[in-house]
Length: 280
Ligand code: DGL
Image (tube, rainbow, N blue to C red; front, side):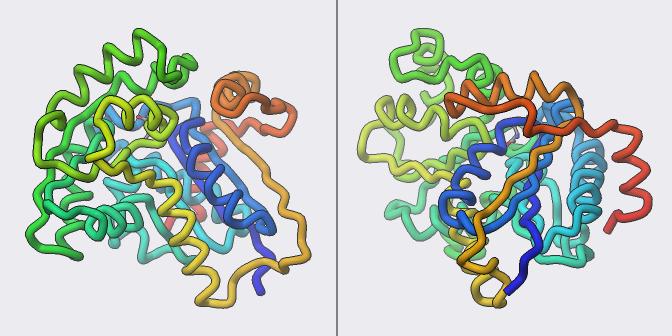
């Protein structure tokens, strides 16, 4: 048994879609969620900048004594390599390997679509991870950056005309193609799963990285005897680098209700000082 919290980080609020899956699967666990809302988005930035931010985010989680680090952010997961994550003193997972494994098993045609931020698609990380499982996988990647502000504006309902128009444009490479599996490779996209699923039809299976990562994390902790006491009622704490009210406002659009008083602001100076002490 391990009573320490699980640490989750993201560039902002979107990673709550991953947190939601983790929490649903492991209600006895304590969680620390860190959202770098002061520097979001990561997906349009350079690899070097994303790596710097991600190592500061992980240092923050380590300073809170977490037992495992989960990179909920598709972009950070795509850019971080073993070089950075093997140095962590606790187990790590991003969203790439769990979802790539699920997609490689799910596809019959071997043609898998990946949608994500420009940095995620550019990294080729999903393709590499899937080809470790099945060498003949072909990837059709497509960056969909405008889905992020769309979802944060609460415009993710199936009938929303702006969402529909944008989805029609972004999903065109997959319509009428041999792709039979699509990875929703960005924190925000599972919020659009209803619309995307309807537009692509039942012939294309959608992979939700949050759900796959939650299963992976549970199995990982269970195999190492690191789960919480099942009698414990899990507690979650949230931190962000911009206004807690802004965090709660977006979280509320995602989940209906969210109390800003649960969120603590961390100053960026504090974060970079911590990363000098704690960085892997
Ligand atoms: N969280 C990011 C991701 O999953 C999306 C937002 C951003 O670009 O930072 O890739």
